[in-house]
View (cartoon, rainbow over the protein chains, first blue to last red):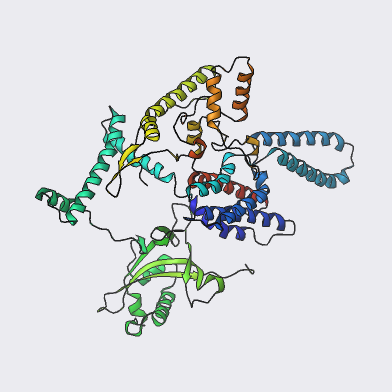
Length: 384
Length: 192
């Protein structure tokens, strides 16, 4: 739910574009409601607050409460739904009796009036019966006091508790002999924890050049974990078989090899330094070894964090099906041009992925592999 | 954040619709839970009242008073621990029909008062004025009598134990509701 929250405000205005005259007000209200809830969420994720930020947060909460009635009709309980159905049936019965006396020529107009009246009555019933009185709606009103008393809100998350459930209880259960499990689970994590602390202490002593027995030093050397490189690189995954050169690649992506060669030459001219330019003979380019891939993992700095990265996955399956449903070719932001280009987008443009591929350098003596992505820029249709 | 496992709580099987036998079972379950928590909290009571010597980072030993100040749990767990009904707030006395309203400053829950009523009126069925008052309080404030596990803790402010939690309130709560609303909204305006 965290990620839909991030892209919701980008997607919803597109879904609600070009409203007709009756829709302008409700659409604006719905957007304000969603925006204020998202803003409130963003503010409550702050790691530190100043006296100015808390009123901001409060303001968003107030705005959300003021505008949430636009969604009231979608909070129908089963009981209200039954009542509304009953009301409709009752109306139908009453009308059937009256309508027998009307001349058939006026029936159409009467039917329109009827459906309008039906809608009005239903909305009235929903307005009087539905409400947003559920406990989570109330609990957000305690965020402010909590910040004043205890500091920021993400400081006391339940995520760690939920994770500990796996590490401390489920793993403990698996390690136990299932006979006297509760006791073994309780002692299992305590033991691991104690050993970890002991190793840390010994490592500290070793660094401080304390006199340790040789077997302890040997054990420390043996068990020392090898440092893993930080995963802040973009990683390509999901290699396709049977793709060897540009011709295969073009066939798989349904693009002619001439187009690919043309694009490659353009890339080489525009983006590579002169001493590394690639040959421009189509025959050489066509024979270049290519690997086609389906997924790009992009590390994105997490909101309000400095060293934590979220992995966003951009997938590009070409014409193939993704999980046996439809093909998936994601939209991505492309960095292009100077700092002040494209206004608020600050040199970023939207594009749709066509292919993700690795291609070897055209000169045999250069052992370079280029990781490239084919994209198609998205343009505005019907002024957005 | 460090989390250490102190004990495994007995979790009874879920009960279906309430009948008389189930009601008794529920009471037994709540009593068992309370007994387990009393056992867990024994060392904490002494430490909060008398203090306990603890090694300090500067090499000295200091007398520390460990006072429980927060309990991280989701709403359902809070409901069980505080002995309240599922549509009640563990922090303030807000009536169920005002949960969705913005304004309204509700009084913080006074668990000590509930406890006093409970001690003074061992049986709620009697006809005395006090029993009627206690009954009224329980009903209006959505309290399940005698099921609060934090009772009789020393120097602990029970309503402040509740910690708001982004995961369950926002991400799994309001966002999930909002997605349903938006789907309905888009369907109504034929925008799908």
